[in-house]
Length: 327
Image 1 (tube, rainbow, N blue to C red):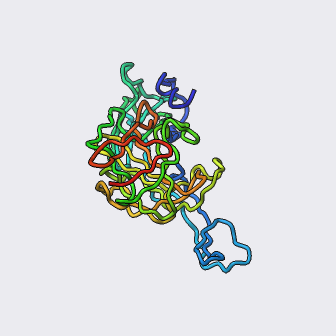
Image 2: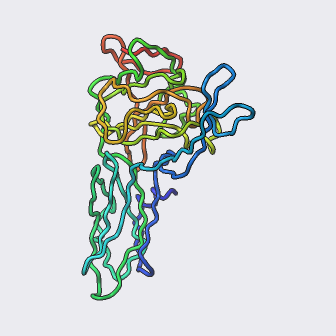
Image 3: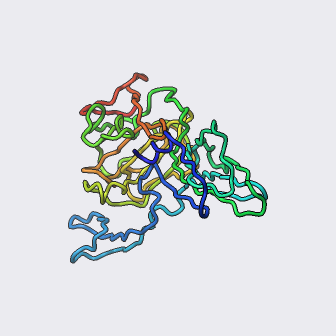
């Protein structure tokens, strides 16, 4: 049973001993929240092309060496406790430009009363907000009080429903065409709920990527330059853009090229706007764009089926092997 399942199925409540503590568990880990550096070596290849690598080249003249700080400045969600004269409260601080669902487990209460038994320790915290989740009365005056707790969170409102106003724009330049290398029901690598209905589009590194639907940029990872098929080494290295739509769903544009993303969290983007270049970063066997529409469903990001826009506004279901053309 996962921690999320544990929180959903039962609420941990116990007599309190010890001090206030919090363990933060992230349900959505994509590498952008890690704080460490990569060394980037830049040099010319035998054909004069620029090569970027994390391994020192042998014999080539290095033009530039750079340390990349991965994940600094990314939005985050935290839950803190605050003591008042006769009460203790828990407050969620959400830096994301989207609502976030939070579930709390109370492990220990010290000199603090239990919340009402009918209270569901689950909240949807609005975007860019500081929200009090609960406030509990202390039992004895002038005595130390505290809460030991855990929490999980996931971006998105669980009440969201996928309701696009029209089929999605193919996410590259008008009149261009590229093949679909993987789409439902093909599941070579799309084996998780958040990728079941994702679409992989094969295209050269550096292809212009355009927004398939208007929305608000929620998350950006842009400093990764490494790609490969080792899930342990490469799985968290994909550059990406996550955009929130007005129906509460998110579009994911992944495997983007290093240092090519033109948007940042909080930006409002329009359908067809140029947002980044395609690449080959993260868990990837070749240059392509990974595109998916996801929503929060019971503390899990699930992908949803969708249509691209075809000729004359028609609906085009993405299928492995077809050629997509942007209209």
